[in-house]
Amino acid sequence: MKTKYIIGIDLGGTNLKIALLNTNYKIKSKQFLSTKCFKKKEALITAICDSIIVILAASNLSRNDILGVGLGLPGPINSKDGIVHFFPNIPGWKEVGLRKILQAKLKIPVSLDNDANLMSLAEFRLGAAKECKNAICITLGTGVGGGLIINGSLYRGSAYASGEIGHVPINEVGVRCNCGGEACLEAYVGNNRILEQARKAFGRNITLEELSVLALRKNKLAVKIWDDFGRRLGIALTGVVNLLNLDAIVIGGGVANAGNFLFNKIKQTIDERAMSVQARHVKIFKAKLGSDAGMIGAAILVKEGI
Amino acid sequence: MKTKYIIGIDLGGTNLKIALLNTNYKIKSKQFLSTKCFKKKEALITAICDSIIVILAASNLSRNDILGVGLGLPGPINSKDGIVHFFPNIPGWKEVGLRKILQAKLKIPVSLDNDANLMSLAEFRLGAAKECKNAICITLGTGVGGGLIINGSLYRGSAYASGEIGHVPINEVGVRCNCGGEACLEAYVGNNRILEQARKAFGRNITLEELSVLALRKNKLAVKIWDDFGRRLGIALTGVVNLLNLDAIVIGGGVANAGNFLFNKIKQTIDERAMSVQARHVKIFKAKLGSDAGMIGAAILVKEGI
Image 1 (tube, rainbow over the protein chains, first blue to last red):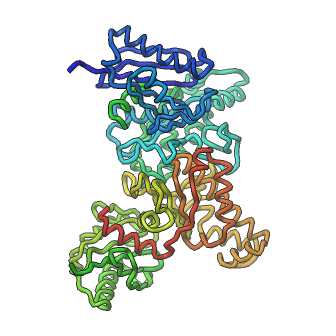
Image 2 (image 1 turned 45 degrees about the horizontal axis):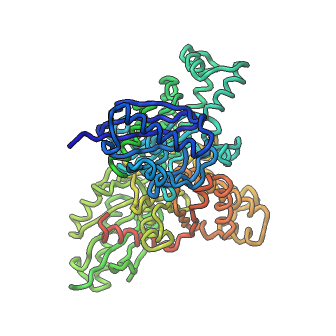
Image 3 (image 1 turned 180 degrees about the horizontal axis):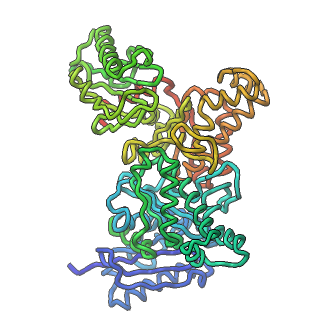
């Protein structure tokens, strides 16, 4: 039998990333487009289809060589019926039957899921959470997303909307969150909030990278910002591990590179505040698959049909 | 074939409750003992065995008529290996192989699990959460316990220590909790804390029943205490539903009888603070099986062998 390939796609608010993978999830080629170039839903769908055709042609493959197309998408997705409920950060999408549309255009089987779910699936099958049965995978960025592995399977929730660790409240009263809630974790540790805290502390604009370098050099203001970040994430995770008694917490996204002191502060907070059995049992890992995780997870979704 | 029966036992810090059930989980007879009468572990184990022998004799049954003995126990339990890790409120128990001990004495198959897990299992199979796939069942008492149903099964966690909704922090900084943590839900809404708040507000000792009656009569101080209770429970549950996207929240324990205003306040808080999909999807029910839930859950554990 001829070797088959999989197309793995990761659509974010900023980039549309498309990869050709073999069935062992090795990326053979990939290409990035800027999501913002495609203002309308139809233009974005056409761009996805065109990119797939281009990546196949460049590798001398036809649609018969492709097992399926998997897509990780930035919002709540009914993965069973292949429907996008909406995208919080890309306007114009509401209850879109994307699987049906793409399958009609491409004549290739299509699978969809939420991007954080697919990142978690990838880290669980091939990355940092490989030996774990129950885990949460977190992406730290503008938003704070998450995906859950429960009893060795991706857990999607009753309406495909699970994993929202960014919207666990960490105070009774606090800042308003973009989700409409109050005092959510994301409202304290989303990238924009960290940059705002840094601007206030240093009296000028400062990048997250510079903030990390300053903390490594033991700059007190920078250390304080990362300490607060780790402590707050640790408090939200204390609730999660007391509730779910997990094996592992996997942390990815740009901020995960801030340095060991961030991981140490998270661990210290959980050790101090979580119940002893749950705290002893949980391990904290840095995500292993980096920005490829979404595309790899999309390919796993296709191959495993889950 | 002769009809079989099941023994369902619910051991609490206060009462040891023993029931004889048929295989449709109907309670044929039950008896209560005071847990505090048995100071030593061995005395308590002997009391359990003696009670089983008494209840069998009274119903004219022999051990061959019994499918098994199920026990719901107040602490973390390795239900697979039948081991009690410890009981937070009954001294003298540490890593006790209780299943092996009881099976040797009784010559009947024995199953063990945590009491909140078995209450959840009972409400899920026969009670308020019967049609649900993903649910949390909460018991409000001196402690605030919980059990999780995930994808239609009891979820026990990686080290048999899941479901601890009472130990989800609801503030970054707050009162110390009995578990060693800080600002846990239980530290605000455990019965003793509510009684303390009531004593401060009214300048005298007041029971929970009286506090409910006063609130029903619209006494402002009493309404405020129950409002704070519902709001705080609602905030912890906001995190839980954003994370797990549940179908149902089942609330039991004495305080669940406080009145509809408690349930309304919980619902209102979740509606205001949880994400729209998760909030719309979750229903809140009062537990149906009351104080029998633990014994019924223990019987389900025996029959279903889960």
